[in-house]
Amino acid sequence: MQRWVLGASLTVLFATASLAEDLFWVVGDRAADRCAIVTSNPVIVGDIWFADGPYKSLADAKLARSTIGACPNKQDPADD
Image 1: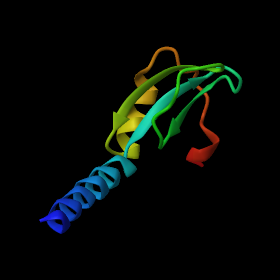
Image 2: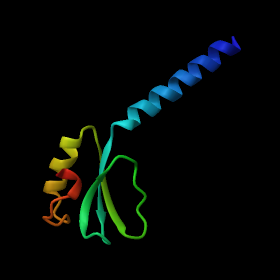
Image 3: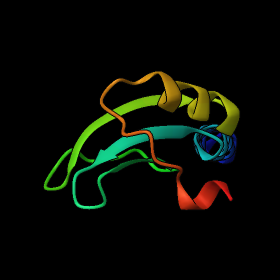
Image 4: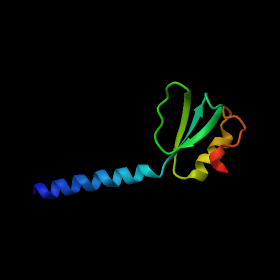
């Protein structure tokens, strides 16, 4: 019985972790004067002044970044 509970717990843990891997956030970075797309849940502190998301795909995050008025109209170097 204990094996079953341990196995079920590990399955839930790994399934939850794998679902969070493919998420994207748009963050405002004052130091770089741009909005970046990141793959980890951002912490709003220091130069990071806002975050929006999560988005399920990179394309969704890029679309959201283009519609956020606070984001400067600069091309993200990672998009090249």
